[in-house]
Image (cartoon, rainbow, N blue to C red; front, top):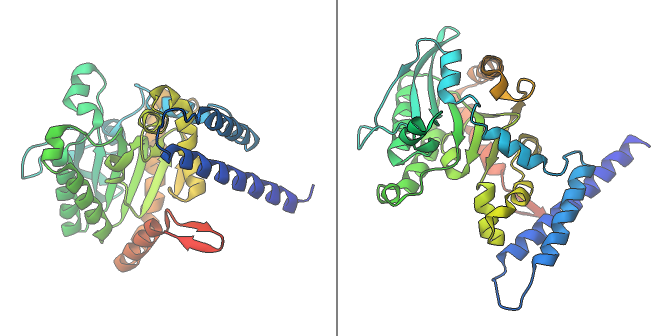
Amino acid sequence: MPSGLFGKKKRALQEEEGRLRRRLAELSRLPTLPGVHLKDEVAKISQRLRELGRVRGRGEGASWEKVKLARHPERPYALDYIGLMFPGFIELRGDRCFADDPAIVGGLAAYQGRTLMVIGHQKGRDLASRTHRNFGMPRPEGYRKAQRLMRLAEKFGIPVLTLVDTPGAYPGVAAEERGQGGAIATTLACMARLDVPTVAVIIGEGGSGGALALALADRVLMLENSIYSVSSPEACASILWKDAAEAKLAAEALRLTSSDLEDLGVVDEVLPEPRGGAHRDHAAAARIVKEALEENLRQLELMKPDRRRRERCGKFRRMGVWRENGLTLF
């Protein structure tokens, strides 16, 4: 079969998948009314989406398998990568306003004859450390600490590396009282304005605005078995279908895997993991991230700051553009 026909078939499958996903979104917005049963139609659409996934080589349940790998308890966390990549790392603490948030770690690192500012989400390995780190869910003081370190990097012309791995920002009452939403927004604004090169690597879970706050970078890289999404599959399923047990279906609909996000243009590069996943070989995973960091920093440091800012902002503005019937919608 000529290659042109392959391309036409692929586009037709993508268009059908797009129509089905839009219909699924429309159904999710309908109010729940007595006597109105949408479950059968949702099930039919979901089944067809699974069939399309198999045709396109995704495989049924593939997205959920990625979710489980991204959450694997032995997967390397930010401090594991820092320890393997940057001997002599100097951690800096506190937001100079309220407290130090251990869910976000950051500090100075020596790398290839230059200094880097490294900032990342940090989970814990056991119950005590997970509780101490708040399961990797930052509070406002964590994001304000990240801002402080970014401004310090800007002052001294130091490139910034962020390691993203969080289920999301902490949603508790105390965090909201201290301005959680504002802290995330000002962190995004801070990253957008930086003159220094910035690289973000999604190393595990990239959940909601809590992840995005550290990922508005010149280059956004993503490990093969990581996930990145506006919501966790469980939360999405609870909102759309009033049932967290539908998390597997939500994972497919969210398109949260590295291959999905590369296709959508949300991430710039997908990094392969050691065979079986990063949890099998921390050192090999760190080498892969280190090599990708070196190449991307080399490219970014050749660019003038105004060009970096312009391309960074342009990249994020292009995300979410929707074209329908010849019209471009934002």
